[in-house]
Length: 274
Image (cartoon, rainbow, N blue to C red; front, side, top):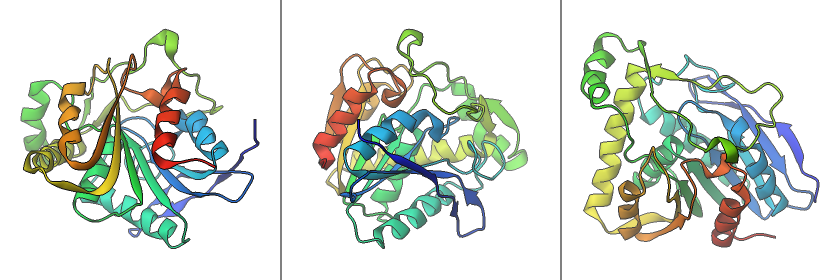
């Protein structure tokens, strides 16, 4: 197995907030950069094995924690406006593109929703985009959808449980290699909830309009996903330049399962490897 050098590489956002990042460097000169984002409540520590595998395939892989998540700064589970996530992603993409190497943006679940929206709006233009179970819809209680816009105005910092349970079967769960992983966020603020629901509606409107998507995109999705059901994301594949790839037998989180290498290999078939 080729060695991979792992380094901390914090990123200062334009509003001054510090985002936690790890860089996984291949031994040889990289064939490109891969920016890898996570989902709601979690952090980049769940992607250590996948990031290492991408680096072993020749990609300089950068994992990052969303603001308010993991080791990044910011109030826990809070964002003032959804476009702030787009700002954070865009600023990192621009910095990586300035290096002059091919660039892939990959993101899971809510991270996939963020990346999809940023690409659809023309804010990011990586060479390729990979979305893992992008949360254009999610199995969230109706009452939360009803109260979120109200509470977002009057009590934006109020935390409500997400209700998101285990996204990987216990017998298939990949151990977290981080010796002290940050706590998983079981509750997020009403502002984040409201902003997220709005972003989902906007993303579904993009799909409904049809046509070509701005970036060559691969969507991977577990056929047993109980949180973001496959039928909610399959329509993305109707867009031009988007390729929908079911992952047979996978649940919601392909990178946190013992079979993560199968998902990584599907992605490498799309983006290439050394």
